[in-house]
Image 1: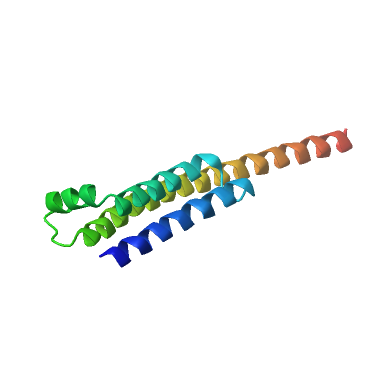
Image 2: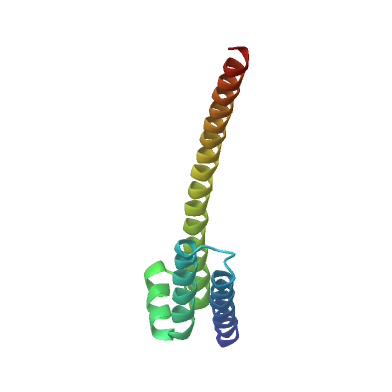
Length: 119
């Protein structure tokens, strides 16, 4: 049990460092890094707090506390992936609308130039 919890602690610290370095190098925006940091800190706290983990495992009806931790982490990251899918979908829709507006503006500019040259 301790070996798995130590591995989860190491992974959470690695995730925290990766997110902070990515924010520093401007590879990820701050508003998106917050949810990753919250997830990683929650993983770190749960992997170090045996009493809390045992009580959560009891509430979930799981006999092996690290399995409860993995179940919780999986659920949290699944929600985060859904959230980012919604954000990406919205950005794609916004890009399509922006491309359409640019095309309309280019059409109007060409029409104005054609009208100016024929006059």
